Image 1 (tube, one colour):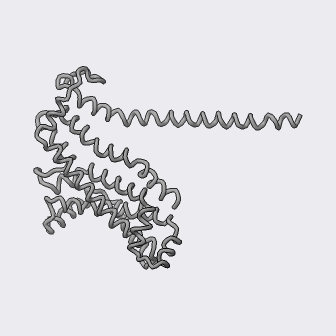
Image 2 (cartoon, helix red, strand yellow):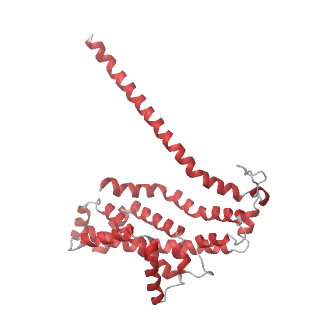
Image 3 (tube, one colour):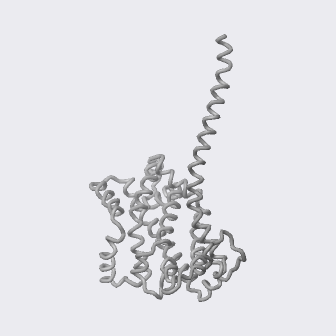
Length: 292
């Protein structure tokens, strides 16, 4: 009797485990699906509105699908070339800022993880404290300082601000990843006569590629979507993509069609970049978080 119970017990336990996992999977989907739908509806509405005609956009009873899809809104948006110019400016600023942040952030994170010096904890705490301040609180001091330096109205000045604002996050993310790199690799390289810069360039940075991609993507997305500093620091003739989108909204009419078309086009570059780098991006985010 006991032998039969023992023989039946394993399949019963296994079947219970399978049912429990299946039930947990359905519960996860039950929570995820409404959140995904809620997040995608505005994007879907934006894209479909970009292909609608003006009379269809003005209907009191809006349609979920374009009855007569047209590229008229895109033609209006791209007619003067200002949108593509603004996108090129934003892309240039985002890429240059990401390169500077990666260069300075990796050097700072390498110094913190390789050397122990007095006050390092206070410096790291101070850099983290800068992220607790809202952007509106530091905008006026930054503008006054940049105006005295003569950096307002220029792309290098805006790039420097973005670099300073994103550097602390980059340092903390890279520190979490650099600490998981075995110290034996550095010691072996020092024994072979390699210098600190050579170790950083040839050993640390290749191993930390997922973290570097994560920092770069986060920095570029933040620069691409930033609005307030770009509005204050740059002139109306040289704007970024977010400021250009705000300018499409007319004073007496909303210009919904051209605005939706411009928003659709402005969404493509970060979306393509994220899909191309998503594997390393996720690996970089989880690598420093799970192992540290």
